[in-house]
Image 1 (spheres, rainbow, N blue to C red):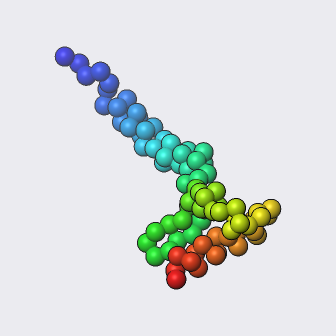
Image 2: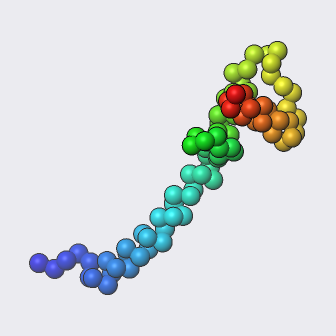
Length: 85
């Protein structure tokens, strides 16, 4: 019984899969922006999703007005300071 692929074709297919694997793994990071890591505290990371969830769940009186990236960075720095203390 003959194999379905010749050894050369199997090697080529394996090379193509090996070349595509890093590209396919990176696609999820490009699409899901909430998984982007924005800060690291010790061994844990704070992602954009964590930061936006924190802002959404804040009380209306505590929630800052965010109009620019600087405002978002200020909220992130305040959150990091509170987690460290």
